[in-house]
Length: 104
Figure 1: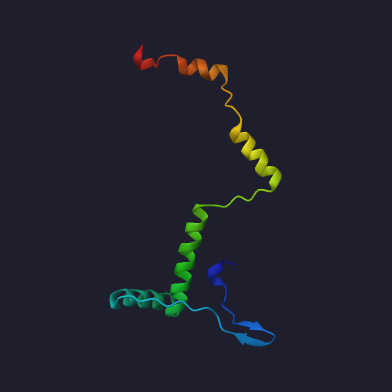
Figure 2: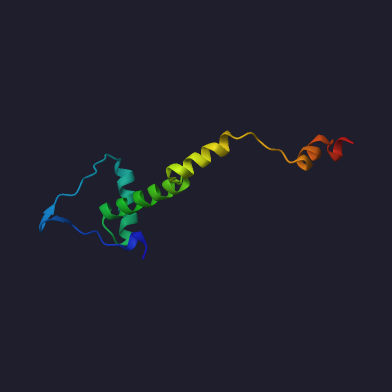
């Protein structure tokens, strides 16, 4: 099941419904008309359309910058590898020392 297929459910605490956070914004009539037309095509409310669209965009952006969590030992190993002197393979060094074929 995709995250866009899940149904929103009211939050409850000890059997009582708890108010969910709200988002309010201003927009032009033209933009609102476009949003309303798209929501109607999808068969969802304006609110649901805006939430789904903004969530999808947010997830896409967050996935562009993945977070890699390391424990202390792995972090220390990572930093040590970055701080270690560069070891250049002699064959690679020799290859870069030669003139390119187009300069011969």
